[in-house]
Structure formats: structure tokens, C-alpha cells
Image (tube, rainbow, N blue to C red; front, side, top):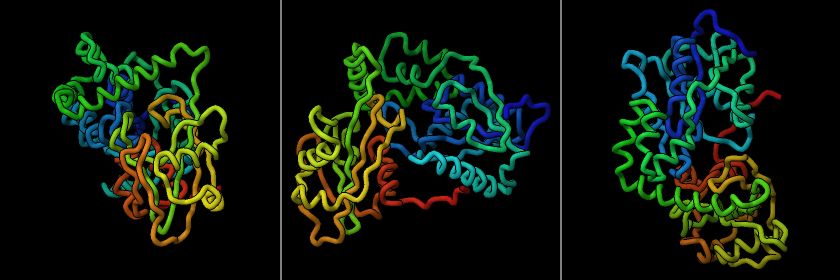
Length: 360
């Protein structure tokens, strides 16, 4: 339900990626502070690898938000980092659990229906999550600033002459104070190079008569409690770990494409017939924002090779700088070094993270 608030609630919840925190976010945060004595800020995509789309860690984003407020208001904020999930219902459940755990750590009561207001503005289908928290009061707000995270990131990485003016208009003073020294670091320079490559990619497709939807394949290959990963040799995501995979070619099925990409990138020492016998599951991953390269739908193929010893030989080639068998127990420590949503795909097939009980 949507309601005008006549009295403050015990707590307000504000959810966003805040990449980076800008004036439209700041306006929502002020509404949340007006609505409740405590504000829980859920920072999405919390553990993603750095990229032009996700340049800041969740701790850096929390610091930007703190800097935007007067010191007296800062103790009223509670930050909850939240990872993305393939399963939307799982994400809703984990947001609630994470909020309640953070409140309990502060000695506060859980976020019950009669005590909690969710603050946000409805822009497009990416804001459907605002209607997924049954029982909470939803307070929607009109956009009062034209700032958008994409515009701000363009100013941060594009190097345009007018970038300082754009940033001064679009972000709070605290965010600007954070960004200025950050933009002088080698990390910024590396991400700016990647941003330019992605800009050129988008420009090349801009002449297409229809919105471009790309189709790829990715392979999760498990063997003896290890999984086969590559290390990317080229941008986007140069140096990051990734699943073997690539773009579907014109005259092949997704399965043929998966087998071809495995051979080209890893030279996995198993015949195709043996691999086919080990194909355990396939799944389509189609979140609109899952890839930096625009709308990209991937077909995940899970090959379970059992308990073979020794592990089949691999050799990196094509786009891969390295191909290696990684212990499954090491994957949690690599979450922020994996390309795009590849950690979520690994979790989906391998069950890396506990799953909350979800009411039917």
C-alpha cells in the first residue's frame, strides 16, 4: 500500500545501489529521515567486482552517504550490505533477515509491518522490488532531481571538460569530497579505460534498428569439489575470474556453443561425448542489468564430472589469460573478483550460500 505519513514510524528502509550516491538519492534519504527515527540503508550489489558500473565498494558508498548528512543525523543510519541473487524471492527474504539481524545487533526490534516504512520512487521495471515487501508501508516520492547514477558515472569516467560542473550539480558536497581524491587514483584510471571501451561498444550497436539483445553461454564445470574458471585476458573485466563462455554463433545451438567455448578457452581434456554425458542442468539467466555490455541473456550449462582423479588437464587460450581448477571452498573468498553475475551463477548451481526458508 502507498500512504502519506501522518506520524513517524519506528524505522524507514531505503534500498539502492548508490553507485555513486547522488542528489536524487539524497532527497529520498531526507524523506526517510523525516519518516522515522532510525533509517536502514540497504546497499545493493554489495560484493560485486569493481567495474565502471560498480566502481565503489559498499563501504565506500556508506561513507559517501554519511558524508552527505549532518553529524547529528549520522548515528540514525544503519547500513546493510546485500548481494544480488538470481532468485528474486530469495532476495526479498534475505533483505528482511539481514535488516532484522542488523537491528538486533543494535538492540532494536525487528522490522514489523506496523513499524516500518519503505521509501523510494517508482521509475521503471527495475523498481518492482518496492512492491515486494508485503506488509510494509510504501511511501513513494517524485523525482525532484534529474541526477542519475549513469550520468554521474559518465562524468566520473568520461573525462569531458564539463565533468566538474556536472558533478557539482548532481551530487552532494560530501560525495564530491569523496570523489575528488578517488578520481586521482590508478584505480580510477583503469576503470576509465574500461568505461571508454564499453562506450565504444554501445556506440557500435547504436545504429541497430531495434534494441540489441545479446545471447551468450556460460559453463559451470565441477570436478572433485573443484570448479573450472578462467581469468579474463581482455576488458571488460580484465584480470577477473570468470566462467568459461562467450557469444552464441549464428549457426549453432547453445549447447554446441558451450562445448566450443570450453574447448577454445580451456582445452579441457575430455571428449565432447563424455562432457555431454555429464551435463546435469541448464538454466537461463536474464536479469536485464546482469552484464556490463548491455542486455545479455546467457544460457548456463552445468557439467558435473564426478570425482575424477587427477583433475582433467586444462590450458588457457583465446580470451582467457589463465584456466584453472579452483576449490569450491575458495569461491566465497573470490566473490568480489568474479565478472558480472558469475558468482550468482556459481551459487545457483553449487549452493555456495545458505538459503533462507521461504514461505510458500
